[in-house]
Image 1: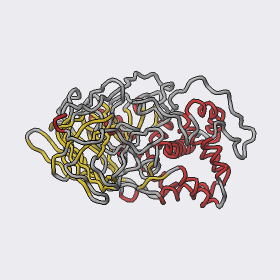
Image 2: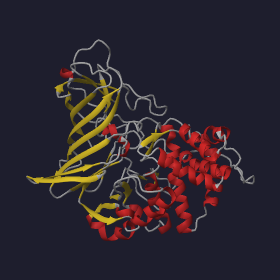
Image 3: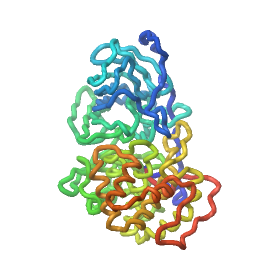
Image 4: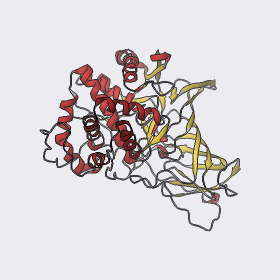
Amino acid sequence: MLLTPQSQAPRSRRRRTAAALLASAVSVCLLAASAPVVPLGVGDRLFPYLGNPGYDVASYDLSFTYPGSNSRPLRAVTTIKARTTADLDRVNLDFAHGTVDSVEVDGEPAGFGTAGEDLVITPQEAVPDGTWMRITVRHTSDPVSAKGRESGWVRTTDGLAMANQADAAHRVFPCNDHPSDKAMFTIRVTTPKDLTAVANGLPAGVARSDGSTTWTYRTHHPMATELTQVSIGRSTVLHRTGPHGLPVRDVVPTRDRKALEPWLRKTPAQIAWMEKKLGRYPFETYGMLVADASTGFELETQTLSLFERELFTESAYPEWYVESIMVHELAHQWFGDSVSPRTWSDLWLNEGYATWYEGEYAEARGGKPMRDRMKAAYGASDGWRALGGPPAAPKVPEPGRKTGIFRHNVYEGATLVLYALREEIGRPAFERLQRAWVGRYQDGTASTEDYVRLAAEISGRDLNGFFKGWLYGEKTPPMPGHPDWKPQAPAKADAPAPGAAR
């Protein structure tokens, strides 16, 4: 994610807050049980109730029917195929902004109720450890915000898009909403015939009937729920070819097609630039979704990154800056999407590396030296740590704010850690480390501890002391090779990371 800087150009922002607790009116469907219905979670330090124990999701099949209006809920069906890792007499899913009509487990009706932001399902028979189960939930998915929590749906001028990071996918569909449980996705969207729907992955069919169109997309690589994307609107899908014949497709408001084309055609060369750094692009397709909406951020939804239209139409943004933001979201396809964080405290690896390549591109294309950027970051780093926590131990966000953990400390502060590491182990080892990281953990999840071990392996050095200070210290350690760099007095208040993209 990259938070859009508000200081570089005047902008009018609409901050959407969303999410009501899942309606629990269908109490007649709740089967009797001796133990109380309670919310569970995988114990993430920042989001303790996200995710659920006892199963591993293999695939999601999502079906949405858009009514043609952003003021009414979508009808939806979510089917989850999962393998149990414990005996389950109940199954918890994360779901918190919609009404559940029915639930089936392996084709049989199941009871259900709610606890916190969990949908708690009671199968007719317990599901044994080590077996496959198929859960089908018929529900609504409401794009209208409710007070108190930000939603995953983004309402645009002509439809919808998704922005689920970090904790909002379960306000769109029932899921195991934690990046440690990645899965394959099939997404079907039915719209009125004059609208176009696009989702993650590659097209898998279009069916037209009775004034509506059903669009089907399928991922070819596992994906975290927070990276799901569905675009609905009066859109044009533009196609071009990237390196190695990679399909590149962009989704733009039809009326803006001509104005946006000079930006869109830069993507294949940017992919080639990234491949020289890291190796082959890790997914089946890539492209940009340009939405006519004010979100305050850009977002690396897998294979189809979300951008605000104004990023490309606001004349105050210099060309090198816009291109570097494009590269930030592209870099996330390796860091954060292909290699996903095992916990949300590992976010610094996603945002630190995306900001690193944003900075390298700004240096290459805009003449903005990385050294100057890092020296300025060093001066501010103590203040960022005081306000947001150390890079690998960020402070707990405010409840319901999906952008709450995206502070300076995990952007420029994390990039500063990478710069210090390069100064410590040398450029050749640092470059080998980056390639090894995205290669070893491709399509999986990885933690800060994994990174520390790999850095030691690549460099042939014990780096535990180095990382302890740089990742977890309250104060920023001295910068290797730059004894003249000094911290500045901490700022009094935190602010969105300037130029930071999720």
